Amino acid sequence: MSHSFIVRVPATSANIGPGFDVVGLSLSLYLTLSVTVNPPAPGDPPHPPRLLYTGEGADEVPLDPYKNLTTRVALYVLRCHGIARFPANLSIHAANEIPFGRGLGSSGAAVIAGVLLADAVCTLNLSRERMLDFALMVERHPDNVTAALVGGFVGSYLRELDHKAEEAASVPLSEVLPEYPPDAGEDWGMDPPHPPHGIGHYVRFGWSESIKAVAIIPRFELSTAKAREVLPLSYSRKDLVFNLQRLAVLTTALGQSPPDPDLIYEAMKDKIHQPYRKTLIPGLPEVTSSITPSTHPGLLGICLSGAGPTILALATGGFEAIAEDARAIFKRQGIEVDWKSDPLATPPKSYRNARGETHSSCRYQSAGRADNWQVDSEEDVTAVAVQIDGQVHRCGGCRRAFCLHPADLRRVEADGLAIVKRKLVLRPRRAF
Image 1: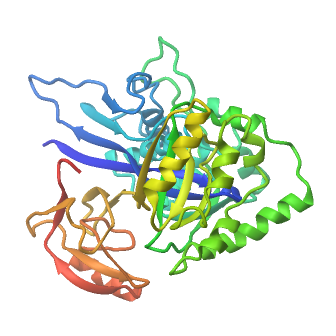
Image 2: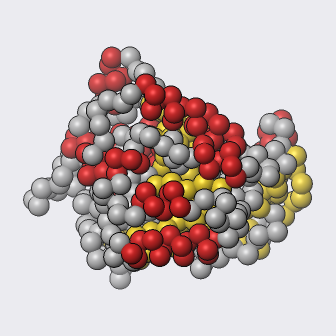
């Protein structure tokens, strides 16, 4: 019997102004894996994984599962659990909306997708914290991968580990994801370094529902490595205090309703990375200084997204005016841009219900937005809507905070979540 599931991971924006290498925000552009495992049949004998890739980067992404980043990460996770290879007759269709090299966390999304793929395809039942450990062995900065895994507006840090654990977490990436030589068989690279436990910690901040993100995406790539090369090795105390003061305010201000434009605009300023990257991104200083709450009603703050070149604007309205004026500034520099305005994204997960059934990539949605779901039978899992911190969410089959099977409702109630409304089982539509 064939087994199919979906893994959906969002783009992310790191830094959000003063939070260099500290905070990240998930956005509603996605890397989606549609995965099928078919049992061997006379007309379909066992075969290695088949990978199809469409969307952003389709012309440059390797389709060999031993060279593709997502499947290499998945294989690393499997081998750390004593599983030598992928299940036979595994087919993966990766549909990607996240541009490469634009400061939108494309590599972080690929890494998280690989961890989730391994967890779902071989029923590893990894905790979210353990998933983050595996991701941090590949992507050494926690901001993007944590936001992609957890969703929302997230702060994270790398723990100070003991000497042995620190050495384990710091092995070269070439040992974690070795380059497979052309003549390598399936048994090559069978002893990967295992991640220590608890490499990174995180917290999810509040977020005002009225705030949307506008991503202004220049049509050129900028590698993270190149963007880091221009940063100084040391900073003045004055500049560090400047960022710390604003970050302390920003993490609370973005959760307030209504949001305060003057407070947030000033709190999204930075002296640690953006001033040094302006030479790599023509138009950056003018965009961040001339587009303000006073000139563009609805704007809250504007900054470089990650290493760039994408510009991230947070706003409650006036999205088109913000984006088009930024486009005009870049155009004067000879640079074309695309832009997208969307609410904060929350990513899917792959988790099991009380009966051990896997339900991958259930997306948490606000009540009244069930357009991506359709009703199925009641033979599987009961879905409910729950209220958390005054916000109503619905889920179609995942277990973590909103455990939906009737056998688990007691635990949900014990956690203080108010069950608002029972539903029939919901399953993602094919076009989801």
